[in-house]
Length: 429
Ligand code: RAT
Ligand code: ZN
Image: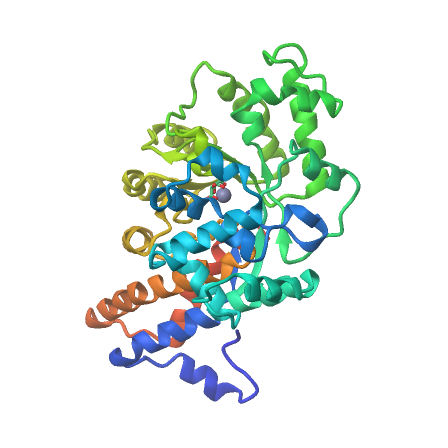
């Protein structure tokens, strides 16, 4: 969006005029609707990734957020559910959460919003007409259409070099899709070394289970090779609530001696997603993870002792949010982002976003979608805009009441920082 358009200076002058207090809400909504998003963490893939990319009604309904809800409202046991094929699973989720119950949870309402925005009937008794719609879509054309509907200009993927099908695609060479930026995910390296070091070995790196011998040099070589192959925007890892750094453990060694130097060398940020308690109920598979409060003094140490590194940070526990803002005020190499996973509900997004605006102005990244299924960007970004609009409006109203008028230009600059520019500048894009 430019300040002036074909009608020239007068529009530019108008955009710089104070907006009347009672017009602020409408103006904020307009600006947020018109500001495209750069979605900095998703699990989406472009068409050329084939079956790794999830989309359509059956994937939407078997999203793990909904599976967790299914087991609360249906009598089926997880073991029985996993025996069903995907169509049967989706039918069961639909019947249970959308027909026998009112779909009011955030994840269920999201499916309703997606169907509505695609012109489909969210009250359909059967999924067949909905499935028929998705069968007719050509994925290459459908992806940009969905992103446009969501007001998303591009997304960042989650790319795992130790996932064999994905690694194989990268090794065979991929055409870069400008709407899908890579991010090199290191969970298997940093959290599951014991069970994954041999995958590095099978890619030709002389690493050892106890990280002895040439492991560190070889891990550096592995990272350098994958950075050269993927051109990721950042390296990333999710970490447990028990994460401590530095301590005498393998993760500290791998982070300190390989990952942090690799980030420095490539001038790449490291995204830390802290506070997940993986598999508290393994029977639920992907839906079996939980959250816990972390000790953010480890983050303080990282930001202070590694001033040349940049850290994009999301914390999963609601209780950690305030400290995260405080640390962001101390360390400019720390960029808080998103209201992650269990936090991505309007009530909590509102609380966190208000806190961040109050403490950090517009110098943070308010949200990422974490979409796993393509169409989720539609509802996740719609809900984000809907939640943030009144918060920004109240903020501007307070500013006006305190004597500083607010213009459309101000709003646009703020929205662009929040939805795109903070990330782009952080990435040195
Ligand atoms: O939000 C989610 O879908 C989680 O399952 C995780 O993927 C989490 O976002 C992560 O990236 O680890
Ligand atoms: Zn994620």
